[in-house]
Image 1 (cartoon, rainbow, N blue to C red):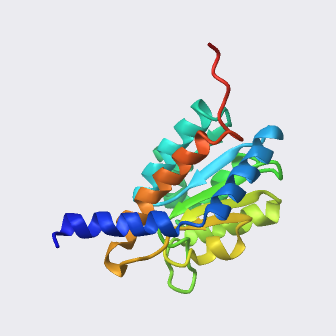
Image 2: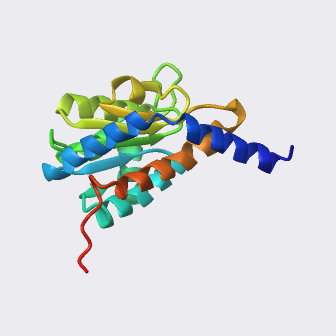
Length: 193
């Protein structure tokens, strides 16, 4: 079997294994946030940060929900990293954004953050801050979902079918799921005819 066949078969398996109820839970919580005029703050690192930027566009334009990603402002983010440190960079950004109980922090991540392994500790800190602020925590994560999956109000864990391809599958399915959500009947904005 070629690598292409293997990768596509893995993708097909993941698609069948996705937790549909978890996706519906995300949709319902996002509906509540939209109804309350809440905002979504998408956070992620690496390829997931790029996905956050795309998700912001789609949730704003297609679902009509005010959304932001701190990684879209590279000047502020790098100044915070330089002056305050990596671990607190997202928390400080959320503080200035006045994160409130009507809002959500939406994590896109392969691992979901893990302080013990010192991986994506800025995500762990941001999620902990969001919980303390009373905001919802949502996520689309891979592996076991890490800290995000443990404390989220709703999270979809992209199933691992091959340890060697966790990252490409997790980041690909982030896009599949958020595109599903922005077109979900609970969220899709009414387009004037």
